Image (cartoon, rainbow, N blue to C red; front, side, top):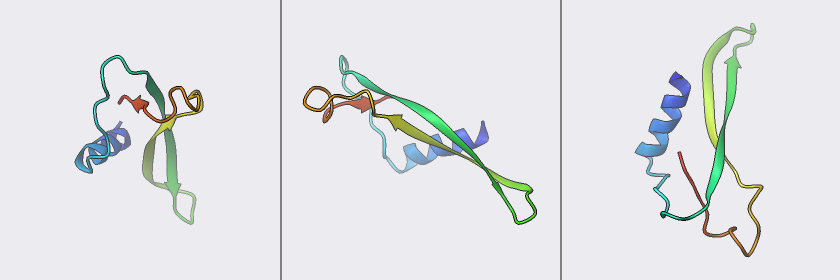
Length: 70
């Protein structure tokens, strides 16, 4: 949970997300998790990344003006 909170806090602090318009189709999102390891194979840092799943968009229909919800 801590890496996810760090990622969300970073998105808010960097102002890289905005609320979408009501009635618009939202892009789904998902989490990617990674455990960073040192040269001995011990985990020293957990990281998460929130990514948009833009593959269901259709060019000319909802490709340019679709927003992701968090």
